[in-house]
Image (cartoon, rainbow, N blue to C red; front, top):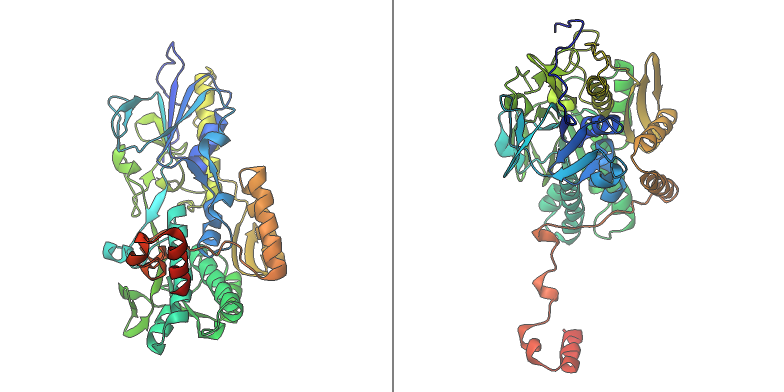
Length: 457
């Protein structure tokens, strides 16, 4: 994109400039925190009241951590910023002509706008698969997936039909990027430990985890060496890795890979993402994933006071390719935009310095003491990479309490092989069965007789 030497922005109004930030993910929250001491009115809008540490979301889905350990209330994070208010609302559109964002029932004017609305799952034209192959982007997704996985074990324990039991104990994960690999390894470890120790009719050897990838490598963003190690580590956990395979059909009883049918009651989507509607809101050109193509400073063409950051934006790296949709990119983009806005608000010269991503490396974990890490020219694998992965993720968690809780849970899990968040919550299947409730006839009896009647049943 073109990068002129300076930005022509609107004149500073007599009142405090209004900065509206949409989305409290890594990009939006970093932008808000970067404006903490700026003489501006900052409004952060999100449809949820918490900031989520998405890199550890798969641990909630596989009962390794509880939701409160990877999420913090937005108001708590920003409560010391006197110039910032938080609104729990959903933005439905943006009017560039009126310089306002549209909420459900009101309009909110802005002088500067930062869109950090993230991304959602992409099903490549097969949105009907969404119901039977859910993805993993929110706490609701994670707790629903945890419920599905744990219920599969419980139902298999009760199931007398061997075919249905095999179907319940087969887990198919579509997509072998970091999320797919981490889910596959975690479910394999969970099944091996839980089924061996806690159940009587089913055993770990009965569980099957199938990882399906259309490309020729798992973790294709890593080097072939690390990718090969990750595949071998998955195979060591008993994961069935299918490379060069594409899913052509998907339903509530399994998937079709080419001409082969895999029967499964739990199918998980980790194959792709698409952007939020931010690009459409501001009439910006979008890439194939719907991400807004931005200028070098993350602003959109012809509107230097409107910025898009994180997964909602398509920004080119030094090699000309789009930057990856990972947390460090979003955080740095949010900080960059905050510096630009702060300089303008304070009346300092504003240079259109192109955003430069400082790559601190990429990491992915496969299982206990097995991970890969690419830290610039240094490549790590195995237990050392796993330790670096643990330290990095704890360090970037927001909140001292969250860091301590995660460290304690991981230490306990390492020593005992236990997962402490194996709770089945939510959903109709998790409700008590009417069979365990008192018979209707008991309800009319005195309390003592009712208790006796129930205890005999």
